Image (cartoon, rainbow, N blue to C red; front, top):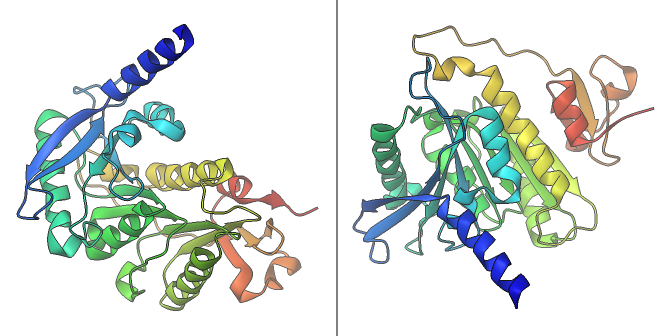
Amino acid sequence: MKRTFVFAAIVSQILLSAETLVVKTKAPKNRQAVFQYRVPKGYDRNRSGSYRVLVIFGGRNTDGRADASGRMGWGKWCDDNGIFILAPGLKNDNYWQPEVWSGKALRSALSQLKKKYKICTSKLLFYGYSAGSQASNLFPAWRPSLCRAWVSHACGVFHTPSAKMSGVPGLVTCGDADQARYIISRNFVESARRKGCRIIWKSFPNHPHDVPPDSLTLARAFLLYHHRRWREDLAAGALFAPEDSPAEFIGDDQDSVYYPANSPKAKNVLPEDRVELPDKTLADAWGKRAQ
């Protein structure tokens, strides 16, 4: 009994670390649309430049509190890198379709948050799993200029690939035992790449509809790469954007190994299994270096 009480108290403290924003909408079940947020430890309003925001979409109709509290390791990661979490707690009304009403609601929530904290309301990072993975790619496709990078794990619904997303890097992951979503994800990645979109793909053998720890490690390495590479998003003054550089490594999804991009073996990786990896840290999170 005592142990249960202690556990409940710890959970309560964690949930209280998330704060709430409310946005009025015309959506029938979201008249008072709720967004939870988390301020990174060490936040300094007097520092030069603004702070990045990570938008986390949880499972369908979640209230956002647990995700905003920093579960699955996101809290520590955001503290370490000075990133805010914003977790929508939207219900039904096709909220995963931002062009209808929820995109405007997200922008209103960001505007509210900016009145309180020094955040960048564009060039957002998006992460979603399960039903939330639909929103984490549909929102960037709705307004590509608002997104710096996005991740969808175990997704069953994607946007229609188009060239307008060619400048917005994405990461798509799925367990291969999550059969229907695995097939949908593979097909999307192939279609998006044909449109010139930069998509990193990673499958996880024998995983059903879950969130493997290694998928989170990869997601954080991917988002951190783009967060750091595009620091000028947050600068007080305008800076030149870094130029795109060729991938340093090429991964082979069949074996989860990667090769130096200029090696003969890299050139032999089949197009459908080929994964372009920009640096070693991200490559190590994706797989293992071939011996």
